[in-house]
Amino acid sequence: MFTGIVEEMGVVRQIKKGRTSAVLTISAQKVLEDAQIGDSIAVNGICLTVTSLGSDFFTADVMHETLRRTAFSRLSPGSRVNLERAMAANGRFGGHIVAGHVDGVGIITGTRRDDNAVWYTMRAEPQVMRYIVEKGSITIDGISLTVAEVGAQTFSISAIPHTVSVTVLQDRKKGDPVNLETDIIGKYVEKLLYAGPPAGNPDGQEGADSGGSAKGGSSGKASSSGGITRAFLMENGF
Image 1 (tube, rainbow, N blue to C red):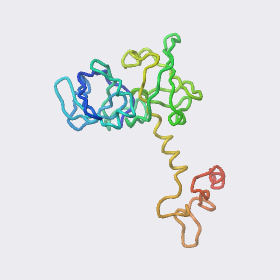
Image 2 (tube, one colour):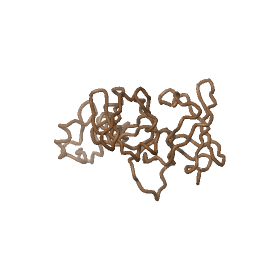
Image 3 (tube, rainbow, N blue to C red):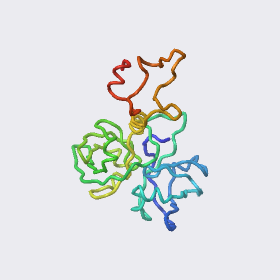
Image 4 (tube, rainbow, N blue to C red):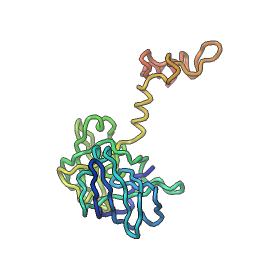
């Protein structure tokens, strides 16, 4: 798990491409201080496993699925990347819950200055936009940011100068692709609401006692389709 607080910018030293995969060699300093083979490091928001280490670099394998679903295909030797080690159990939670699993690629449609801030507007596919809410959290190339505005097909964030200066946001311009990870909580809530009854419990009733009444409400049953509806929640006191 990560928090979206970038620790340093690394530089892609080498990309060794296979038929549908790749091996990245990335120059770094801070994230290597206590790194070991097998550790997880987020690279532009993508959780990668360290496969080898040097005094100033590490390597990581990139699968076909990762290349297909992220902006990694645009990387080249010399590209700067955001780096973050997995969160330590005794560390501060400065950003939000970040899994390092990219939901999709956004395209920057414009940037503008607003006094000391820089606004970035991005276009994303509907399956990503549905989880983006105003004042909610979004991870852009591994950076934990707050959504400032949401439209039908685009959203915007406002970044402070410090964030821009210590991350690859300073390199991003109109037309550039970025890795997007939406707030993980929304995806799990949606899945639980609409997934249907649990396996082995086809009628959706949970924990019925010997008298036939279910725990947790007057009926204990969700809708006939298995999802939790507004009416069901109201009936059960929510």
